[in-house]
Image 1 (cartoon, rainbow, N blue to C red):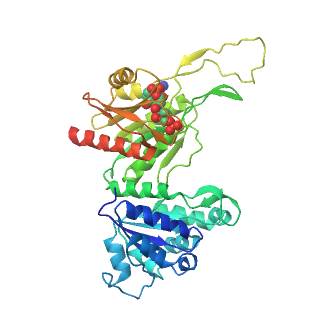
Image 2 (cartoon, protein in one colour):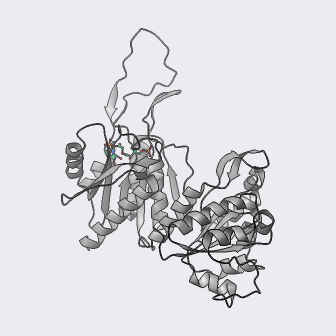
Image 3 (cartoon, protein in one colour):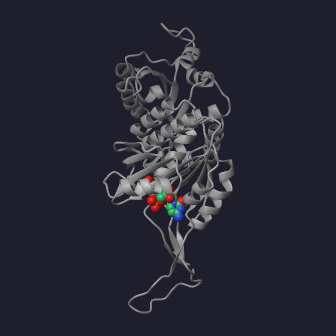
Amino acid sequence: MLKGKFITLGVTGGIAAYKAADLASKLTGQGAAVHVIMTRSAGEFVRPLTFEALTGNSVSSDLFVSSPGLKMPHIDLAGQADLVVVAPATANILGKLAHGIADDLLTTTLMASTCPVLICPAMNVHMYANRAVQENIVKLAGYGYHFVEPEVGRVACGHFGKGRLAGTDTIVRAITGLLQSPGDMKGLTVVVTAGGTREPIDPVRYITNRSSGKMGYALAEAVSSRGGRVILISARTALKEPPGVELVPVETAREMHCAVMSHYPKADIVIKAAAVADYRCYREASDKIKKTGEKMTLELVRNPDILAELGAKKRDGVTLVGFAAETSQLEKNATEKLSRKNLDLLVANDVTMPGAGFGSDTNIVKLFFAGGRVEALPEMDKLSVAHKILDAVMVIRNTNK
Ligand code: PMT
């Protein structure tokens, strides 16, 4: 997947530096030419020889030492790179970058880079939570740096929490996504919906569904990495919105309806991955409903069908993408929804299949195009599915021009 790509891998001084060796190996295995820059502190944790053996390239660490092909190492390593990744990125490198300090080979290379830069922080839990570090991350995201957040778990110092370097597979996926996405969505505003709405029954109970929001958040991340502006209208999830995305939190289907309608006028593309409740309680009880008989009946009324309403008033130039969560007769139901809701593309998933639908990290989908074409995709992680959907959307938009 990365054949012909030149990746500069910056390794800074944290215990997770040993995991950068695995990352270097995976990137090289996918065909990338990987050139490693180590900071002085990184050399305390791993030896350059490890990276040289894994990548087949010499490791650079000194701003003032040139080598064959690297006459001015910081300019050459920045100029040749299709992407620079810093993994692990310590609090120190985040602080330097956020404040324009360039005092070694890695910081000068980063400063001279015009390609996408991906930063993968890893540090002690309390250091990561530190306000200065968090503010630096927000600042850097605003400058256009991309991030793969650390994971929650036990870190080397024994603390439990957020700070552990993201898995190397996750980092490779993010790199692949960035390199496959040449900013083709720049200038486009995309409304993405995600998560499962909650319809209150009484002050303590609600009706909902199994959506985790992962599919919608993956779409938001993919649009953002391709340069689009994302308005993410999300029902409650346990997920953190990807950097650079404008989050509009909602609870119920009616709130989602309001939010979608108010952002629709500025949208070029709407992608409705949310699982919206078709019904809500006719009356929400103001007090907790008490147990009475053996049976109880809830009276439900229809919620607005947001997507159908968008389809009915679709403007020229807007691309409308719906999802269909099916448990049987996928083709028949998908085709019916595509035409009834006046969509350009419908993404159908059979949510009974292992590896597909609600909650999983992967999905198995079929794309139904308005012209009648159907494309079945194999099981893929949700970010890759998201990119495939966006590829299809961009083809639709280019052919409709
Ligand atoms: O969130 P995850 O755990 O990652 O799971 C992903 C997913 C299974 C939720 C996602 O892949 C998916 O299929 N989303 C659509 C779920 C759904 O509500 O499907 P539906 O067939 O009921 O609705 C069809 C379309 O109409 C959807 O785009 C839905 O957003 C929209 N709709 C539905 C009802 C309604 N009242 N208003 C709507 O806009």
